[in-house]
Image (cartoon, rainbow, N blue to C red; front, side):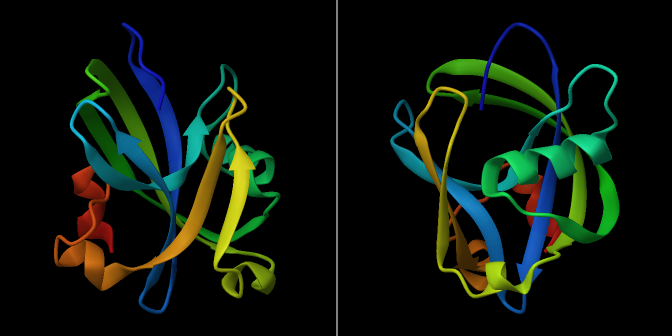
Length: 143
């Protein structure tokens, strides 16, 4: 998650498989807490949020998406590692086109800064119970 003094428009994809959700993990060192977030990323100028979603999944985990359904827009004002952030999230429900992704436990990719990011399947009930934290929290209502 990148912060600046501007509002960032991003597209995120909720992919569920039975009682599992495909997310990447993160850690906020300022709050000393772990969190999970759906995959996706920034919408570039001249690109629709749907196009951004498809591009980000292709770039991050080399995956094509299918059954894409727009869920809504979430405004997310937050603090991450002690810095303020503001996002408008275009949230989608989708599936992997290739069934191999449902067999993988995790996929490692690299962010723009070259840091490894691990995307993995986690149990949806662990989010709903509060044992794991999904951000932004408003995404939980779409599970």
